[in-house]
Length: 110
Image (cartoon, rainbow, N blue to C red):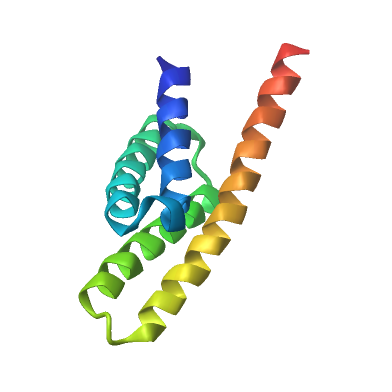
């Protein structure tokens, strides 16, 4: 069950970052799914949350909110610039988060 949940989280994130290929509507649908799944992931791992994971959650929220406001106020390009910059930072920080998770899982098996 946990592997299926992590796979759904990874798929929704992958579809979210493929916005040029999938289009805006699928991007927004996948980002909502990613937001909900990451919220469930945060709740299920709440015993292990530190400052870094809280910052990651905050960055997810910043990217989501600026994406919504960028859709509403298309005439203000600075909102979309903040959305793009936070999304790029989110990709790097989530990659680090996933790498640390798999590194920890590798150490447990050995």
